[in-house]
Each structure stands twice: as C-alpha cells, then as structure tokens.
Length: 231
Picture 1: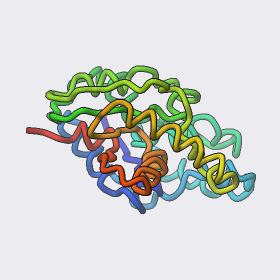
Picture 2 (picture 1 turned 90 degrees about the horizontal axis):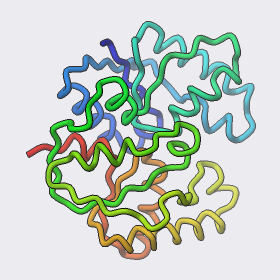
Picture 3 (picture 1 turned 60 degrees about the vertical axis):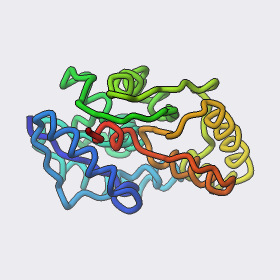
Picture 4 (picture 1 turned 90 degrees about the vertical axis):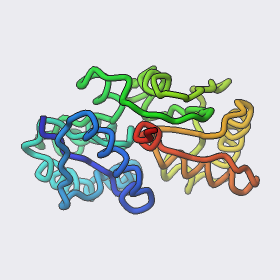
C-alpha cells in the first residue's frame, strides 16, 4: 500500500523525531511510506480561531498534495480529526483524502498490535480530547502499548479529563488552561510512571512545560517513539 506521511506542521517544526519514529514503525511493518514535501498546515488553528476563509487554500492544498495515496497516516489525532471532520465544511467540493491517525492505521488497517517494540519502562498514557471525542480511538493506544516488550502501563485515575491545552484555548484562557494542566500533572505523577506518552505532541508540550516548571524529571514521549524503540 502506498502511504503518504502527514507529519503536521507542529511536529515538523518542534518534534521532527516523531515523524521519523512514525516512518520507522511503518517501514518495519513493510509499509512503503512517502513524504510529500509540498505539505503544509491542515488549517486547524485557523479554523478553530474563526478564520475560516483563510482555511480554504490550505484545505485545497492538502487535498492536492495527498491525492493519489491509498492512505494518509499522521501521528496527530487533532490534525486527523480536522481533516476528516472539517475539511468538507471549509470546502464542500474538496476531495478529502483517507486520513488515519497512527494507532488506527496499525490496528484497523494492518491488523497489528505487536509492532516489535522493546521499551523496559513504566509508562502512563494521556488520551487526548480529539482522539477520544472526535476520532473515538478508544483502547487502541492501550492495546499497542501493552504489546510492547518490557513495558509496564500505569493507568491514570481520570483518563478522560482534558489537560487544558486545547490549542488556542490555552492562549485565550491561560489561567483556566494552567489549572486544568496542573490537575492532569497531579494525576500523572500519581501513577509513579517514568514516562508520559500520548498520541499528540501538542498536549505533551503543554503537560511537559508544566512539569518542567515543577522540576519533574518525567520523560515525555510520543506513542510513535515508544513503538519505534527496539532491543
């Protein structure tokens, strides 16, 4: 299957190692991955901020860049949700490519839970709002993590609670965002895990920033980085 990697502008700018990890996992499983260099932002930030006319050229560019791929895979639940749920709202005439969040592609398309990873650490997993409420990813991340050799998954007491990031929400409502984040950090610390994982680096950046201000040494990793780890 010919797959296009939608790395997202956020990962490309701040977390390029997540894109490399995603490619590593997919290629290990025999997937042919291509990276269209003409890709840009999916328009999520503009759309969520009310600048919908400014989304139109971004949505059309996305459709053009990823046209012809049998599947588009991304290590971002929020960007996958933007494409699948809102690109047709921005431009009803656009042909929306088939976009999968990484966990969905591994389990639903490749029918794989054990990707051959080895990660001998205790891990807590933060399920992001977009993954839960828009993509309905459910237990897919847990199933993938539980299949990792040596990994000890520690459950959160309140897994469905938002971390407070919410993209532009954290900018417009900084006090509320910070308070929500502090609650999430307390829940994470209560697991005693060495590593915090998630399927969106935006939430990890928010939580990790709060942890660093508290002097918390917990490692922050995208799910793809754990799945890419081997013996």
